[in-house]
Image (cartoon, rainbow, N blue to C red; front, side, top):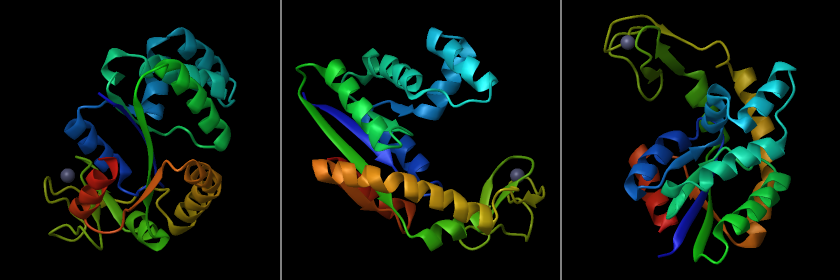
Length: 219
Ligand SMILES: [Zn+2]
């Protein structure tokens, strides 16, 4: 059986998170999310976690070698033997090369299919998702004043509590977040395109439409 390795790339609010959890269940592959992995290593105080913590406490970035080591330990676990979905890493071509080396060590002579899926989405649509996003102060349910309106203005359908906007969900902050993302990711996309392993999926539109495209892409 061919081992299926999937790397997911996509800007914040592209719907990547929702689709990833669903695909993880559908394929029965673990969703290896770098952010959660790092938090877990810190909480459990693993050797890598302790080193990471010492950097964070000094207000410094955790070195890529430590992050890579945490990911490698996770990808070597038994539930990743037939495949995995990696999310949040790599973020640069340097990291992509580290991943390549890491996987060649883990996989040795295994039969492997490696694919990078990019959630391609219109930037204005992304901005609208963020600017119009509101959430319930009590139960956390998410609304969108354009596409997923509450039944009563300003109130949660579930618990009637007040809907609030996150402080950083302004157009200015969202724009700068996307600019950073696209600037960082552009070389990475080119890197994987050249290797012939990149599939761009159209992430505009309804969740079900994007889901169908995603299933087609990972076949
Ligand atoms: Zn609520």
